[in-house]
Length: 241
Image (cartoon, rainbow, N blue to C red; front, side):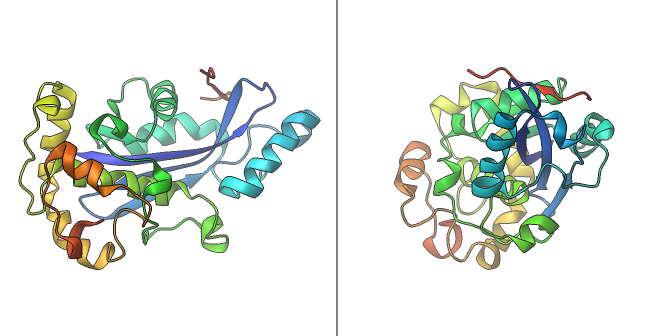
């Protein structure tokens, strides 16, 4: 079995209850490889109302930096591309119930896990990490949120929550009673070699200074070494909760 961190960046579509996938990224924890695509828009921007255009401008300027007209992969290939990128993985790990529901809509046959279920903190509390295949858009504007970056942060957090500092399984009654989490733990064990590379990849720590590492440690009774592990078309229909 295998698992991957997944993240997606969106823009609002012409119908305000719809979203367009702009950026999709999958991070393979075992091989430390990030696969990222940025999709071209499904239709011209003038199809959008003034309100939607204004909302998208805010998201572009303040969140992910992706413009409506950015992207090179035709949107008609969105569904096939997502299936192709995620097919090798038994588990797709995302942060947040909304992202989980969105991914299940995009890839109905996928096994999607919200990493909040295993104690991962909010993405804002995870430190920024070096990503080898950083997308072009966010190499130019590094302060914006990149799907490739978030996918890697999610995958490393999963490894931290499910493995001990030396790759041993962490015993937790709550986790073991959840078959999906137990299976995900097995997938993480298959990738325990990633622990040996954390010295160089995560020297600044998996959690930012205001992150609460103690919450994870106490919940999963982990022993972490501070020097090592503090660290399709048309558009998507997504119902807001």
